[in-house]
Length: 385
Image (cartoon, rainbow, N blue to C red; front, side, top):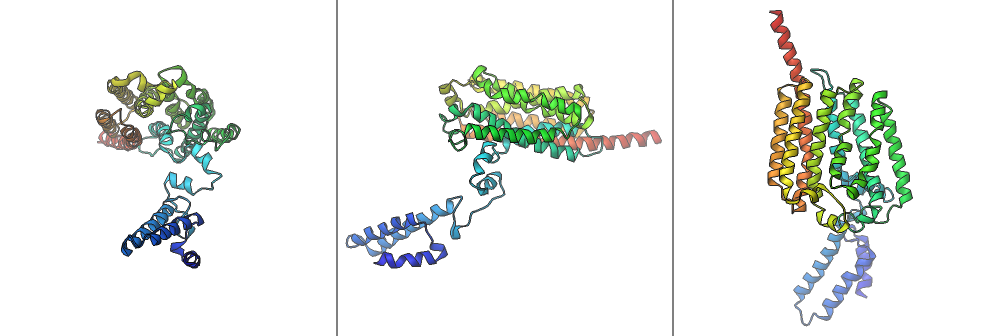
């Protein structure tokens, strides 16, 4: 009788509104407490009831879809935007990893380096090109993830970290993923067609790398090298989009540096999954290097820095650029020195920090271009007097 009278009260109060399945839990607790009130002090019974009610309401507030007054919590973070999207759309956004933007950054940053190096002295990088390439990076990274998950759906189901991916979890069928892939590639093609003919041909040439990369882990212990060739294509494309063709004395060293960079961060990333990879028969540089990972990463760092110095020299870069390259070297040295390859959380932290490394180099390129302008003015003044 008491429970029946309490139901309208709970429903009428916005702070006490609970889903129907939780009424039973709360009232069961009340009933048990009343039966045992002869053995348990009355104050303790109240505490038990209050604790159970708080547990139920706390569970509601933690849910991304529920809360007080049934309002959905919203965040401007990528994960928050995905969680706030319609339920039917969320699996597709997660398929393209919109909630995990680090991969998009790592694809986009070599484009920004190349666009920045192609800028005129004293000028900012072409903002129109930066926007186009940012959109293209988002779409192509999403397309790459879709292809990867289509190839790896059977592997993903056997690994706890990837079992929740939409295709592996059965939220999206292979046919739906294929249609979604077609949509992403069509939009990416629209972005590519905004560039000059040289860049369109150069960009189209990268599609074979995008499609074949997910297969490499079945064939070679160096899939990270193929990923490097794929992810750093923007180091060639950015310059050609601005200048109309590639200056290979700048673009090739920059591309080489990007490939070395990918070998560094993706080897670190691969150490998260090495135990599962062994069970599944999947190959990676993490398994190839094992306990010798740090010497290999150090060698890749030296190669990357050498390529950046050569690219900057051939592009007539100035002091701020080379200061940024030095800072990149220090960042990588600290990253490698402090890396614990047997701790997945530490591997992820080191991997994700590479976004800041890429932004640091981009800022060095921008300020290096401004320094070029100042040097040109100084030279003009000297010749005048």
